[in-house]
Length: 216
Image (tube, rainbow, N blue to C red):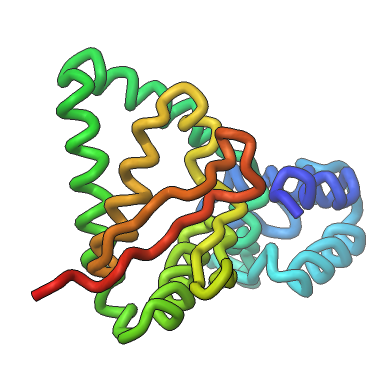
């Protein structure tokens, strides 16, 4: 379930409580939440207990007040991820700015270089000998980046299928970003990668074929 949809699944009061905590990076007390939400202490505590149980909120350090210390409650990283972030719009703006300043060829080279650098780091975790093992390990690495990737057999060989292009919205107007994917996979595996099927071109997935080992 997408984060924005997961947030909408919560009740109105819990949504307001989470938004209040989002605006309070140092944490908020029960008293502050009562005032902000217009509900009782018991109601706030019940909602906090439920949200702590789902891993969206955590209890922080007590805050000294001159009397009895007040407990503070904070969003967890999972709680923060519920709130949408328009990465696509920001990334598109950055890329268009780079095209204007550096030119198409330099931007293409930059994307490939970024993919190669990250792929070189991933290569340490892909220590397989045959293509089937490499496909499985590469799919696992792509999956950790959000590609929803699997190693799938096509004929006599394993290929990698990615069902969630992390650059999908951006790639519609700037297909050059696919150079990052290919550079990442080639650096990670030490093999040439063929882009066999593409979500942007109506495919069911982004499918990649792993080339033969380089000849010595």
